[in-house]
Image (cartoon, rainbow, N blue to C red; front, side, top):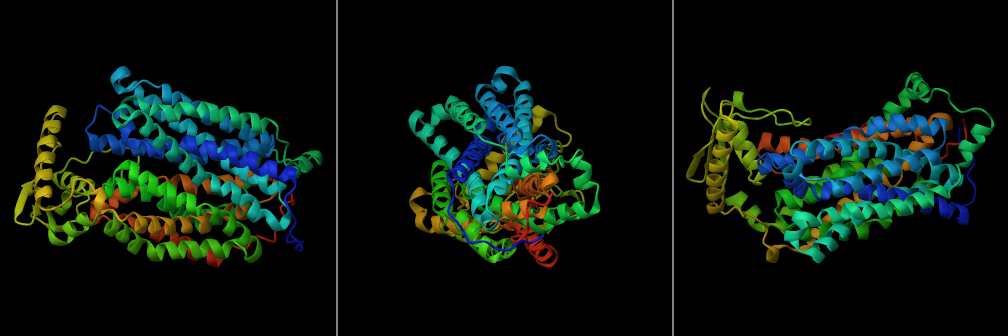
Amino acid sequence: MAIAQAPTRGITAEERKVIFASSLGTVFEWYDFYLYGALAAIIAKQFFAGTDPNTAFIFALLAFAAGFIVRPFGAIVFGRLGDMVGRKYTFLVTILLMGASTFIVGLLPNYDSIGIAAPVILIALRIIQGLALGGEYGGAATYVAEHAPHNQRGSFTAWIQTTATLGLFLSLMVILATRTAVGEEAFAEWGWRIPFLVSIFLLGISVWIRLSMNESPAFKKMKDEGKISKAPLSEAFGQWKNLKLVILALVGLTAGQAVVWYTGQFYALFFLTQTLKVDGATANILIAAALLIGTPFFIVFGALSDRIGRKKIIMVGCVLAALTYFPIFKGLTHFANPALEAAQQKSPVTVIADPAECQFQFNPTGTKKFTSSCDIAKAKLAAASVNYVNEAAPAGTVAVIKIGEKTIEAYDASSLTKEEASAKEKQFTDQLKEIIKEAGYPAKADPAQINKPMVLVLLFILVIYVTMVYGPIAAMLVEMFPTRIRYTSMSLPYHIGNGWFGGLLPTMSFALVAFKGDIYYGLWYPIIIALGTAVIGTLFVRETKDNDINDH
């Protein structure tokens, strides 16, 4: 039901406290969650030391993704709790779980100390973090929206939308400060634990603040009237009128929002460090600067959505991102690692292999091994940021990599022992590195060649897209669902979109790059999903800004 617009008024002291407390606690939760992603390379060496470096890094990314994969289950568990018990107490529990898990990671012995138990415990802690985060966002967004005046929900909830970016920014800054204080060598050995341990202080502040908060007016009113849902899960997902809204919220809003958000923040960081070989400190500073400059636009677009509607802004953000990702990421290569761009143009590479041996290397569970000569050749080239074209060879042929006039034969590891495979892998990697170097492919980006102002401009544009799709979406999701099942209903599509579509983006993009032999080919994943969301959202999702959210 829509209600008439009222004049915009100033924020009361109580509303300011609600926004600050909810946002600050959520910033700390995102800080905890993002520490892992920012330190994936170091964590790979600490906890996955029993494998080769490339496999260790992939496993570390998959452990990172595990935290995303379980988020929808956290949304179900804590969403149900939030709709039955209350918003305040539910997201007090979530922050306790998140903070404790992060602190324990800082104390956890590594692979050399306790063997396989180290990665097992690490992934278990990541799963707990994912479950907690699955309950946090819906609670914070619902809590703030239910305190907001009708015509200011976009601007109020936009503060919650800044928390993911601010949490990432805070994690990058703490990491950078620790690195500077202890030095790179000490940081890689033990200093990486400090950002995790610091989180215990953030946890204490967050819990203290949240204990002083009151329950949301909408939930309190519903509870006083005895209209709380006794079965929010079956009501939200077992009745078609509500389930239809959940599905539309996923495919017509959050899937596209997630890939745009994830590409603009995390994939951009991975692309700079892993593909363009920019040193971690420089990449972190550039991303952090872009986030700092761009973050106010969450509030800008949230407030704008109160005037012109949420849907228009989100759809335009998805379309702009999809249309410009290729030129932006090619621009990042040009300005961050021009030597790599030059090598790609001057030294073409060909993989000559039996097509039947070449698999699509998407492996979200980390359980599948790619041992054919074709898969090994492609994975190594993709990891080295070398573009290549594919050429078919007769059946049963061992894959060959041709770089200019030189060739190197790959190997099949399917019948090798672990020791034989490790020795063969080292020999092949060393030979390939030498040939790639001779062909002009740089092992690292030259700091003197990085055009930092232009890289910053491109990263800022990516962040603007993030603010467009993310700024208004909390208000829109809250407004789509009735109060009695709001926490449950909005949390699930949000966390499927962000947890699955967004969380699996690095793994999917790597598989696409290895499949095609083009370092930009992984961008098709966010582009297709963003365009799909724009089409479905435009055609089937209704504008919500005038909805009455006090309907039970």
